Image (cartoon, rainbow, N blue to C red; front, side, top):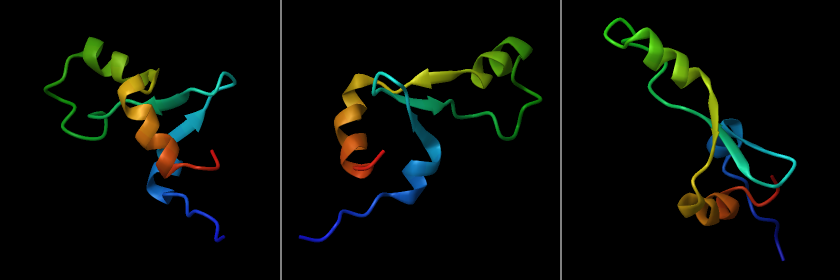
Amino acid sequence: MPKIKTNRAAAKRFKKTATGQLKRNKAYKSHILTKKSTKRKRNLRKSIITDSTNVKNMKKVLPYL
């Protein structure tokens, strides 16, 4: 039985926490920052736990994470 390939794009974007949840960074922080408020940009810096509705698909894409 061959090994399953990990999706490298996803592997670079997600980290696993000690409890087994997936941690990710928020989007919309790379460019066009002038029109975004300071408060909004500050909140985009924080990482967040991946939503439970997406976890099943993410575990399939990241079998060894």
